[in-house]
Image (cartoon, rainbow, N blue to C red; front, side, top):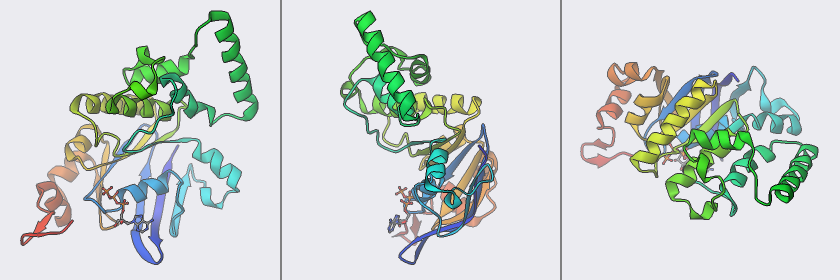
Length: 267
Ligand SMILES: Nc1ncnc2c1ncn2[C@@H]1O[C@H](COP(=O)(O)OP(=O)(O)OP(=O)(O)O)[C@@H](O)[C@H]1O
């Protein structure tokens, strides 16, 4: 999917949160949004996930403006977008059924009923739960293939977040919207998720990711977008933005001295 924000602005009760944002994410591209707390990263991702409508400007998916479509068509478009938030929120069931849930809600009722009947028959024949290939494939990507039958409640926080990623990926969304997916994770789980993001990109998923972590942005992005006070200050390849920022505010953020101004905490 060719995803695009075109001069998009968003505000609540007349207070602007995002102003005049133009940003595109193509298939097989990782675009990372960085910026201090309160810059508007999550809000931008909510526009991309089609959770919110811009108050001005446009969102386009393959040239189509989702907010001009009838609700059903817009929901169908939203199903082509996978979303992962900062904290995992899994159902109280097995790992496989959690991953499967991501696909089930994207299927029509007739297909869901057929799937239910197939699982019931398989369980009756084999005497144990079964799991389908797409679910295993998504779990493989996050290194949890062998854990498919585990109770999700028994997972560590990092494992649960990896299952959330597999759940978002299993329906093969064209765009993945990831809001600080690794900010609560240890280095090992972070590395596993970053590798999974890279592999998703290699399979032509577009990725829009928000992070506080400049090193992560440097490691995984094709392009980095620096957001400050709801404005897109700068966008480009990470080596360019981090090593030769064109805007003084980006330079200060990269140096790490955007936080303080004459000893006053700014953000
Ligand atoms: N629904 C809302 N109503 C009022 N203000 C909002 C709303 N949503 C966000 N904001 C404000 O908009 C600004 C941007 O919020 P947002 O969560 O997008 O920032 P962020 O860059 O993701 O921050 P963080 O890194 O801390 O998660 C903040 O000042 C926030 O308080």
